[in-house]
Length: 335
Image (tube, rainbow, N blue to C red; front, top):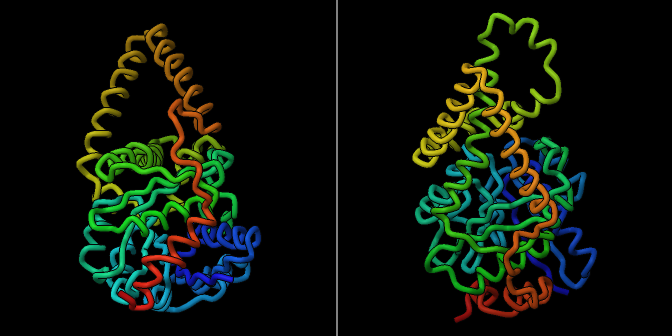
């Protein structure tokens, strides 16, 4: 029986779902056991994660979740990630691999270079979630699920100098979670995050801020229904500091995306001012058709390209890359 020591920093929806997915993999293959130690600033989150068996025990300091672990998973709120690197990074053992699920790669790579000791390795990962949860809009820890990553992807972004065994480990983790491992460029990634995460968060704040300032707000707030709640859900799912840092740490890409959005909004406004129903209808029909095509592909995972190497077994590669090879020797201090 192989036992892997895992630390999870951050026990929100993402962190707890990773723990639940690993425990599900353990049930499917009892030969590999995961002992999971979790940290969260909220005592209630640690208690909840342990009650749900997403972790085996909770600790009170980030370094306690990192020390002695073979795999450390970073899912802290983005505004707290730098401090987590400062506190937990020096505790990483030689050969340990830190898998960072933070939304931006540029900043976390810089922090890793500063706080992760030589001999330990950091890899950025972005989770593309199960399409079954695409419209749930439920981001809090109580909605953590073991199948959150099923039929999804893990976008893996190793930096220069990370050994192939650590990259294989990241890929194996994705498979154990139920996701397909894919590799992408970190610079392109942060531009994509500006469009798919930053713009929705900014629109949520801007839409609420604008409506709240209107004369009709007193009545509008009473009439708001799920459409408005879905549009503005970032304001309850994320702390303002997290949204601020997501926007400011990626501001060049954000400005580019906001410029494109403002240009489109200006064109649509022009159609409304001119009472140009045909132009408005054309824009809506074109968007609707393209959206339908995207949604069908997102639900099926069929993007028209060839899948990657599917011959590797996640459980087998996990055992060989982590427990029988280079990283184990590093952990034991062997040459």
